[in-house]
Length: 233
Image 1: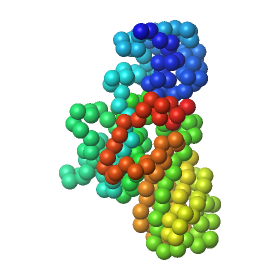
Image 2 (image 1 turned 120 degrees about the vertical axis):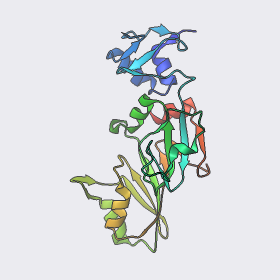
Image 3 (image 1 turned 30 degrees about the vertical axis):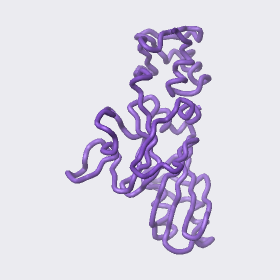
Image 4 (image 1 turned 120 degrees about the horizontal axis):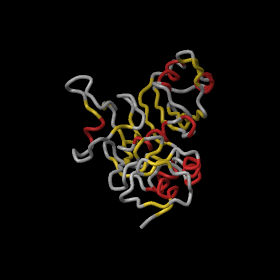
């Protein structure tokens, strides 16, 4: 059954209906190689090929988006840095091919990580203009005093760029929650080291509207279309 172009794009997690309509009107969407600028245009989602900015949008049966609870000790790269290295992709079944991570967590950081085969979805989630926040649980050795809390909240210069958390909250002795808007490489580790606190554990617990919840370490689950659309609305 044929459906309107913007509805199909939104249902596949490319963005909200309103944003998809804007992309169509800007001429950035093609169907079977031809630009479509008519919001009333209908197509068969099972057979017609769709691209956004010349990047293919996978068919529903092909697109895979997973929420993983990454354990410590796993690399987010697709190639092993050394023969004994453990990769995040090792946690997935062999049938789940062509997967890659949406952004990265360093080897010693655990928690919520998105894994997909959909380049458009990954681009939407990672792009700063989306304003998708990321929340971390930070555990340190010893007490966190008001001076150290202020140091972390005030941010610091990293590679010539001022980095400031959106929110820093002490939840109990030795434990913080830190909310970031745009995570740079090892940003939280730099902030904690700047406050001279010994870091024990770093866990990402939320990306936008997605929460890690009680998912066991090393386990993963598929995202629903509703979760995808709420994330990139």
